[in-house]
Image (cartoon, rainbow, N blue to C red; front, side, top):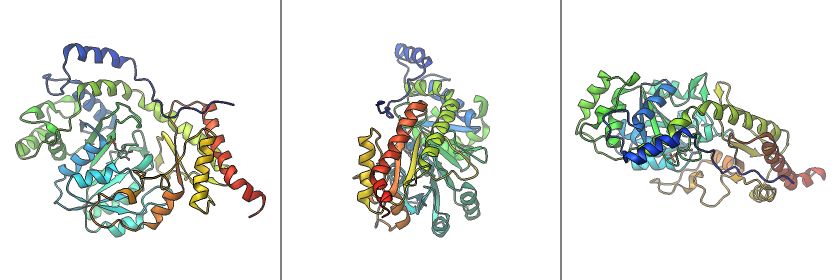
Amino acid sequence: MALAPNVYDAEPIPDQARAEIDRLMQSGDLFRYTAPADAPVALLEREFADMMGVKYALAVSSCSAALFLSLRALDLAPGANVLIPAFTFAAVPSAIVHAGCQPVLVEVAENYRIDMRDFAAKLPGAAAVIISHMRGHTSDMDAIMALCDAAGVPVIEDAAHSLGTLWHGEKIGTIGKIGCFSFQSYKLINAGEGGILITDDADLAARAVIMSGAYEHNWKKHKGPDGQNDPELTEAFARWQNELPLYNMRLQNLSAAVIRPQLDEVPRRVRDGRANHDYVAAALNSSPWLDVPPPLAPETRAPDSIQFNLVGFETDDEARAFAQAAEARGVKVQVFGLSTDNARAFWNWRFIPGETPDLPQTRAMLMRACDVRLPARLKRPELDFIAGALIAAADDVKGEARRYGT
Ligand SMILES: *Cc1c(COP(=O)(O)O)cnc(C)c1O
């Protein structure tokens, strides 16, 4: 029997990173603000902004830091309500609590995307919205932007898992006022840790840069498009000089050296990740017990994992039995709502002030939604192994019942 593929190992970091890391080790120049210009972090910011087609990028220590700084840059009142989908990673409501605001959870549908009825109902009274494109699933950005623009509510996109995803051909992360990405190891670009925020708004960029730790006049090393001085940005820096706290969430040069050569890999990883995902999705959808929700029409996805729902699994025990059967066949499945202390189950976010809201739709989804990693480097035999194991595991639990017509 074929060996189960390892879905946790990362791809090797491109060789070009070595020479740059060696150079940095030789010079000891690891702090982004030591060199007068062109520090690796500054070059990363320029390259990322160009890749995304935006004016400004700020590299920081994590996507969580980027979300936190985005909220602080928006200058929200203490305790202000910030809407988020109830299906996301615990770091997202955590960033809101850290920024002194109140997360308000919005129901998510069976297809993992924001329920627009609940969103519209909860939008009045919100000071900002974070759209977490959880596991790279894009919510209806047309409807969200129409509602938020009409209400004058700023949108932050948590695109931690959406690098390379398109919406009507537009890059996810560039649709809201600010987009935030992660370079943590389980994302498309792997630096162990790291994050970046992008925006076209000079005032927000300046505020975020200063609060990220550009003390004194270090902001002078942040440029506009084409690496040029940007009058709008310079004016904004002058406005905020000495007015803002420093949270010191900077990225260091070694991380930038690891990230920069991976930018060229993005198109290949996106293409292979999508092909792998769609191949496994078609196989899983051939089972009556498994359902992979389709993307929304305007969405071109860039997945590095697959999510699917268990169909006709009446009890939590049946769903658990599926996960056990899959593991016995060599594939580890996470049913989001069924593993103890899962960081993606909203009832475990007890650090949010106030009562845990009742969100029956999201809860029901989490109890049957499964998660399997599917890195872009996997090849057909490995994909066949994974799809085969999942289909067989569903049959292990449900096949008997079907054969006997119960
Ligand atoms: C990984 C992730 C984060 C957090 O990213 P970090 O860089 O680890 O802080 C936030 N949101 C989503 C949707 C994620 O997948």
